Image: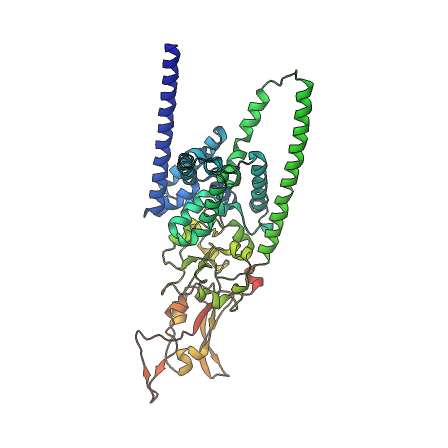
Length: 480
């Protein structure tokens, strides 16, 4: 008896040590991830997103020509790619390895679940609702598959919303970049936790579904190696057959809802037009909405800080809205439309005297899913933001004042001064085939002149003037 007690106590102590080591490793990884997201090293900060198996695999599919992970240079790039590949390999060998050891949300769930079990005494308070793991997991897995698989293999029929937006690393990134704009996702996370502590991890999380799929080969091998019992009681066979038939039809009923929901969301998203100025590298709006993880990495990476995230809670960025969409059109959007658009990046030219640099593709490098994709800098000429619009009533040349700043500053040579007989003036004209809507002409345009009562022109200095140039949306045919 004494030997058994000693053996049991040693086993318990050994398990406690292993558990403490695992938690220490998880807290260490969690601290490294947070430090990388908050750090100033842009390569490490962007590369951290690729630790997620879902985002890494989606980036591999989308950026087959130039993967965003390959943009990291030197030793850091090699370590990042190896780390992401290693995590996927470990997910093949260990069930839900990312959830258990790496995922920051998984760590938060475990800590909160332990506190919940020690705080509440009732069964619901401790464990929440008890779900059939297979049924609910199958429903959400099939739903994420219907939403994401067409995007990976058939981008032309992409769904307008995908599992990328609910990836744990995307949620962490958006929370650290802009907490108010990540509130809807955090609210969904909190509701899932209140329903059941592990509802997010074992039923809802799309990254968990990917890990389950990665582990399926090993599960199949394990089951195939087991010997099937040849002798069973007739009663057990009957009960198991009845239970299996019930489970089968229940599974069919649940799975039949997934494609219906996915198709309805897809149709609604395809009908959404381009309400905002999207970053360079975005062509089709529906394809962009499906690929975007709403992680906010492009916003943080933009050197000129002209990118922001769509947020309907505090009023949508009106400066971008007025030049792209008729007034009141966004106010009539349904909750589903807003849910599809919220958290996506847009170009806001009113965020200061900044514009999109000709030789900058940082947002494309930062995007982990290929939603913003530029094969090279020259690709910006094809995937434009918008187009410049000229209003001669605000131009200094219209008032016979000397000015050629817009033509001189345009990096693409899309603006030229042309003599117009009707106005009997030499005014700027914009070549729509060349202009990409970078906004440099808008920033440098001095705007309409200011005159005194006697007609003398005055340089107002810091006084605001209405600019003759603005950025507007191209025709829908050219966007798509």
